[in-house]
Amino acid sequence: MVTNTAPVAWPIFVLFIHINNRKMKQHTIALITGGSRGLGKEMALSLAKRGIDVILTYHRQKEEAEGVVREIESLGQKAVALPLNVAETKGFDPFFEAVREALSVTFHAEQINFLINNAGIGTHAQYPDTTEEQLDNLINIHFKAAFFLTQKALPLLADGGGIVNVSSGLARFALPGYAAYGAVKGAVETLTRYQAKELGARKIRVNVIAPGAIETDFGGGAVRDNRELNHFVSSVTALGRAGLPDDIGSVVAFLCTDDAKWINAQRIEVSGGMML
Ligand SMILES: NC(=O)c1ccc[n+]([C@@H]2O[C@H](COP(=O)([O-])OP(=O)(O)OC[C@H]3O[C@@H](n4cnc5c(N)ncnc54)[C@H](OP(=O)(O)O)[C@@H]3O)[C@@H](O)[C@H]2O)c1
Image (cartoon, rainbow, N blue to C red):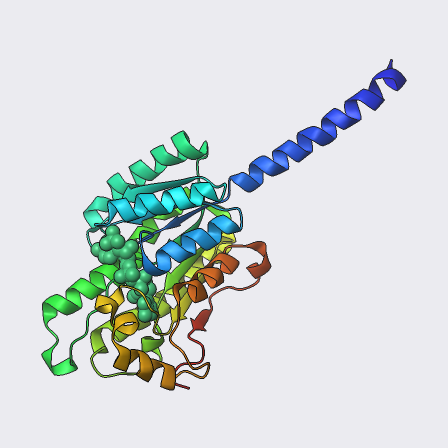
C-alpha cells in the first residue's frame, strides 16, 4: 500500500505548500494613514507593487482615496479606504472596529503587518507669531496620533511586523517659519526610538523616515507650485532638485519588506541631501 500511494501523495503535498505560501504572501497587509494623496498615496502604490495589500485612510478626500483603491486593485492587490481624522483620539476605537471588519470581510485576515503613520498637515508661522491653537493642532495630528493610534493598533499588529513613522528634514535643519512643525516632528523621532525599544520584544521594527521638501499638496502645494521656493529647495539639495512623491514611497515599501529586516530604530532622511 505504502509504495503505491507515495508517488501520488508527494505532488499533492508540494501543491499544498505552494498554495499556502501564496496565501501567506497575499496576506501581508499595511495600514497607511493619509493614503488619499501625496506621499501616502505613493507609499500605498509602492507597497502594492511589492505584493502587499493596503488599508488606507482619508480625512476629506474620499473620492481620491477610492481612486487609489482602484489603482491598487489594478496592480493585483486588495485595498480598502476608511475614513479617519487622526486629530481626534476618541475616534480611534471605532476606527479600529472598522479595520477589524475590513480585515475579516475583504482580506480574510485578523491582523495587519505594517502601520505607516503618514497623515499630516504643514503649518507655516514665524515663531513669535505661532499660536497655541496651531501648536496644539500639530501636536494632535503628528505626535498624539503616532503615539495613541499606534498604541491602539498594537493588538492588531502582527508580531514580526513593522511601523514607519514620518518625520521631516525640518527636525534636523531649521528654516524660518517651521518652529512648531519641526519641533513636533522631532518628538515623533524620539518616540520612534522608544517604540522600537519596547516593541522589539515582539520583533516589531520601528523606523522613522524624514523626507526633504517634496512636491505634493502639503503646505498648500508650495514646493510644487511656487517657482521661487522650488528653486530655493533645488539650490540647497545636493542632487539639485526638489523631491517627488515616488522618491519617498519606494523607501517606505522597502522598509516593509524582509530586505530591511535588520533596520530598526533608525531615522532615515530621504531628501536628496538637503541642507548639508
Ligand atoms: N511634502 C513634503 O514636503 C513633506 C516633507 C516632510 C514630511 N512630510 C510629511 O509627510 C506626510 C504626508 O505629507 P504629504 O506631502 O503627502 O501631504 P498632502 O499631500 O497634503 O497629503 C496629506 C494626507 O494626510 C491626510 N490628512 C490630513 N489631515 C488629516 C487628519 N486630520 N486626519 C487624517 N488624515 C489627514 C490627507 O487626507 P485627505 O486627502 O482626505 O484630506 C492626505 O491623505 C506628513 O506627515 C508630512 O508632515 C511632507
